[in-house]
Every structure is written in structure tokens, then in C-alpha cells.
Image (cartoon, rainbow, N blue to C red):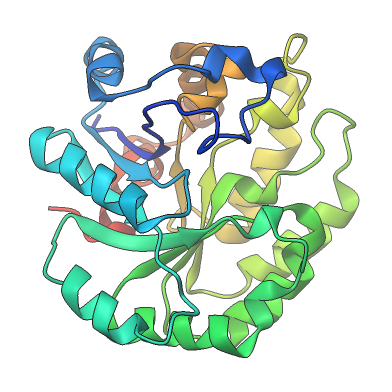
Length: 277
């Protein structure tokens, strides 16, 4: 079975650029580059990946594009662009020539203005993404799900994917509010969801496989098997476990599904969403 990792990161560690990596996350305070990931992929027979931005700069987008140009297993890039920029169309026109660049993301989860996605200038940027055929990764926390519902309704033709299931409170077994709101978002057929980032929302040292089942259940039931995809969130996942452990959670859950259904979750949906070759 082919596996596409729909969500992972690379960086050359810099304490200023990556100031979100606190001392409690010291395992991440070093470089993580394709040469570090490729042996892992070879071991677990991973066919390729989507490299996703972690720094909000044009330099970050170019950094990922450059890595992809030199590493065939990077099948697509989700970069960053200032969606509120006056020259957004000019920027996207240039980016459209770079076929490995599939879409963009903004770190909405960290914005003080929690409904920033509903701002008119931000919306103009999303409209431009739609015009140029780029995808958009929605990175939010659970408190922003109600805004996301209004947000995606404004762009019924835009391809959206929700990162990390909107980071539910797995550690506290908090599910009801998240379930209600993510179910509403899932009813929008142009929204996909990545089954990713779960272990870092659980107890980093004491999580068990059973902790994740209720949350994956909700995602499968609401999004369906045609709009979900596996993502490792490497190297961030290393805060709570190895790559193999993260992969095993999702593989175990879907082990009773048919081969064709597993193929959708682990590869086909990502290929379709990001228009991979």
C-alpha cells in the first residue's frame, strides 16, 4: 500500500525564528532536514510527503521549494504568503509557475484576534488562492472552529484542509464541544481533514492508543473516507513518540477497513487534494 505523509516540517533551527520551540521542547531545538527524514521513510515504506511551513515568511516558502527541488520524495509544498498583501495576485502569479508549490497556510492558532480569518483583507487573499488554484491548510484551535465554519462558507469552491483535527483536548478527554463544531465544519464538502497532531494533544508521556479512538471515530464519521488523510506532524510528533508509533496509531485504527479504503486515507485523498503527480 502506498503511503503519503500529508503533513511534516523541515527547519534549520534558529532560536529567534523558531521561538515557539520552548526549552520544554528541547528535542526540537536542532535541524530537521530531508536527510534526517528519508531513512525513516525508507524504513516504513513511505512513498512521499507534503512539506508544510512552520515559519511565516517568504524565505520559508523558498526554503521548502528549494528542498523539494533536490529531494524527490517531497511531493508538494504548503508555504506561507501574506494573504493580506496588496500585491497578493502578483505574488501568486509568480508562485503559480512553481508546480511543486501546492498551497499555503497561516498560523491562525496563534493569532490574538481569534477570528482573523473573517477579516476582509484575509478573505481577499483566500479569494485569490481560489482564482489561482491553490489549496489552503486551516491551522486553528478548537475555540476557532465556529469562525472556521463561517469562513469556509464564504468560499464554497476553495479547497480547504483542517490541520491536526483542530487540536482537540485529548489529554483531558474533552470531546463534546469539539465534536459538535467539527461536525458542522465537516458538513462543508470542500473541507478535508488531516488525522495528525494527536499525540501532542494527549499526555506526552502516558498516552495510550485508546485515547485517540473516540476522536478518530468522529473524524471518520463526519468527514467520510474520501476527505481524510494521514499526517505524521514530524518532527513535532517526537515530543510524544517515534515516527513509527504515530504511524502505528493510524494504521491500527484502519486495519479492519478494506484495502481500497486504507489506500484513500493513506495516499489517494492527499494525492487528489494536493494534485500530486
